[in-house]
Length: 632
Image (tube, rainbow, N blue to C red; front, side, top):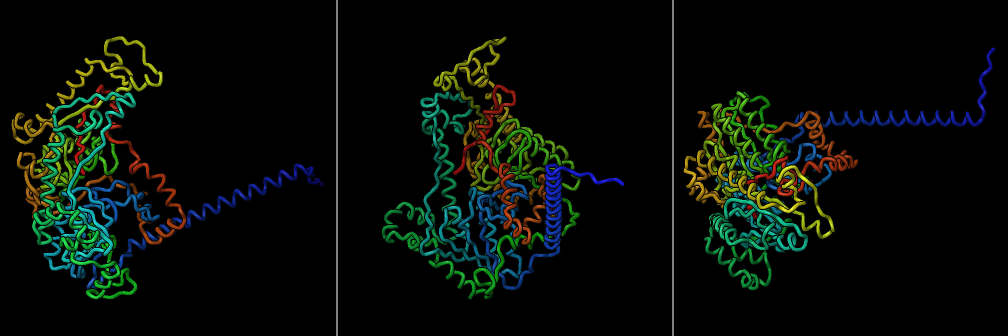
């Protein structure tokens, strides 16, 4: 009979300890497994519930409350998962509102018999430019024409926000609030003294066009006379149009508005320093009311609902947008007019949404060319420009689309300058708002030199090269004048390419193009006068033009945005985070904050465009840029 093996006490202790550790390990793994399984089950239930009609149907006499928070953009700059996670944890700094969504909601409200009135609360909207605001204002005017009442309330409004609020039938301002019209300005910091005298960085600028002022801050201490002349010319045009738009909406005259600004100190003093009272005296608003008083007014005019925010029956912007999305047919076999959005700076290679990539944006246009269901394309451009080669990659795809028999119509947003114009010029037709910023046809190159900077800390560069120009583009060595001539030749060639291509695309002589080029910025109205733009109008007008070119009648085609598709997992996670259950779970657990922190670098943790361009020249001795620092 075998006797059991007897272990000494020390061995027994370690064997027992191992058994305890092993059991604990299995227990933790099992808990994690079942926890993950439970989480996936909750995700599935939440997404299925959302997809099964979780959106509550509208009741009659509903008030639509449009209170957008965040920046007004052409295209989201973050992926769906990042946006959903940000909403789940209440992260407002990353909020964005797509222009197309805002206009779609306003237009649908005008047709919706269940929407009785619309309330505008615009304090947290961050406008990007006056062209897009004028598109929204036009939609609000059509909404009023449909017979729907529009009421605006604000605690404080900027000039851009006020352009939209002015379209309302009634504007109410908090008694402690303010609306001040001041004018437009464009001021920048200039770094010549800091760079050259303090830090010893010599910046060499190579450009064509005396108005190409994008890189002046690196070589001057103040704006050049040419830059001031050109900037004031287009700013005054936009400002006068702004005054005219406000005056028409408020039944005033531009002269009355201008006089109120000119006598601002006296007017505010006469109002006892009360900015709200001053706005009322200037007829910028119709009354002074608190938020509670406005909500009481809306309750009296609408349908009281003690369970609703504000005490009256209403639906918010996001809720109504979900309603519209739910009404869309999943199957639509109509021919398509595709929209490709080109928003942001133009850089080489693949770029995320909200940026324009030479390869990625060209790929979207190529996808439209290869899709037999797509009959025409609208390229929506909102860009200050960027790298010349990347711009040329996109322009070539526009030409290829036309060669394939698919018309291309460009719709310019707030800004389509420099490289933004480069990618637009070959379209069959170019639409712009009168307040769009365009032009800036010019090229520049920027080469910093750190020789004196390194000298200050006792670092010197020396060595040998096999030819005169080996290592000549090293920014730690003094720039050889002969190298400067090489770079200037490259810039001259880039400008010749730019103006030559514009001349060919716009059926003009090179001399005629040069007269309106030289880096000068124009408004849409000024650009149309000079033959750089064909028609006034927004995206809606451009879509109608594109459809007419392929003989598609209104209602007989589908508008489809061609964008980089989200992965199935991203769609799944976005749906979960966007559901009530998912948002509650993620918000309470803090899991979303961890996941959001991992995605934030994709959103905006990038160096400035020019710094990137100078740093990475892809092996080229100089990189040509077509960029415009033209904005407010």
